Amino acid sequence: MDTRNDSRRKTPTVPSIERALTIVERLAHSKREMGVSEISQKLKIPKSTTHTIVLTLEKMGYLRKNVASGKYNLGLKLFGLGSIVLARLQFREQALQPLKQLMEKTRLTTHLAILEQDEAVYIEKVEAPGMVKIDTWVGRRMDLHCTGVGKALLAFLDEKSLPELLRPRGLPRHNAKTITSFAKLKQDLEEVRARGYSIDDEEDELGVRCIGAPVFNHRRELVGAISIAGAKSQINEENINALGAMLRETAGDISARLGFE
Image (cartoon, rainbow, N blue to C red):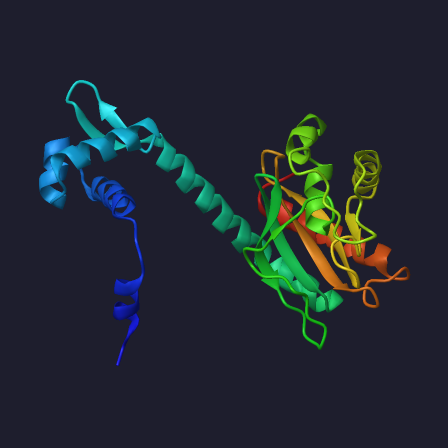
């Protein structure tokens, strides 16, 4: 017996959000603008409720009102969000093969991350074979000041934006090796820019090292970072520079696939 529909019925939902998204979807599939009365009739939503939801969506930029007709269509906010989603999908698609090749060369787990507000978020992971497993997953959010991808992102952002980005949360200490001084972090980021890759020397998790490198698009904009991660016995003083060079080369390959010259 398939119980999926039963579980969906039992899942609590917010009616106003459901109605708002239904209105957006209806307009998306409509070939013309629609007024409040028509939306209300088509979707069987009370007119007063429809009016309130439509005004809210318009205020947020998700709907646009034609002043001449008084009717509504989709707003540019949705176009912007859709463009972001498509760009991220393209980013993942372009990065996946190079990440797999890097994993095969290094036998280390590779990641792809983007900056979202004041955190790095993994959007791709290629797990390395073997007994050593890295406790990361797609969707995991990471601090910027103590991770390979985080420091690779920070190093190539506009320096003027760093205080605004970091000061609200500060530099939380994860362990004794975490950088918690802004002055020391600034020095570390200068070294990242000089060599082209960052090093998380057990700063996020004891026993784990990570190397990160930035990725740029055709507009020369920073769009994300990649990393390799492993136990400190796997990433050690003897091979860390060679691994960093390989990572930097892979980041350059992905950037080139995105049109960066």
